[in-house]
Image 1 (cartoon, one colour):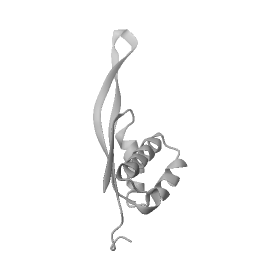
Image 2 (cartoon, helix red, strand yellow):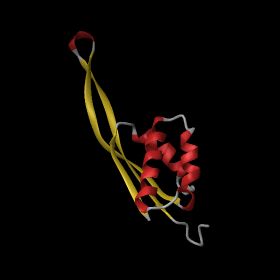
Image 3 (tube, rainbow, N blue to C red):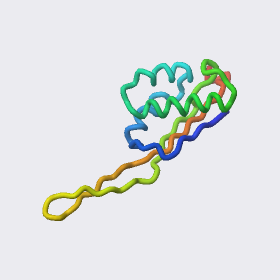
Image 4 (cartoon, rainbow, N blue to C red):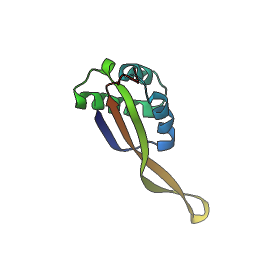
Length: 110
């Protein structure tokens, strides 16, 4: 089993979790091919995390499966936009922590 963590990615965790749920349990090679054509900004970061986790374990992408793909919320950057009559409205810029674990499939999973 090997793991990769990418922290403080400037993307909403809610949007990124949608992709993370789809690829959980997939073969790493198939997941990378799927993410390449996914029209979502978070797909690029998850693909980087998968590639990193595979390299950390010294595996080949075709021989491992994604056992866990988790997206947690990081700190929120708060900004203000000037509005009418001297007021201001808040702008929230969320960050994410992406964690991916890959491992070789056991007899049960194969």
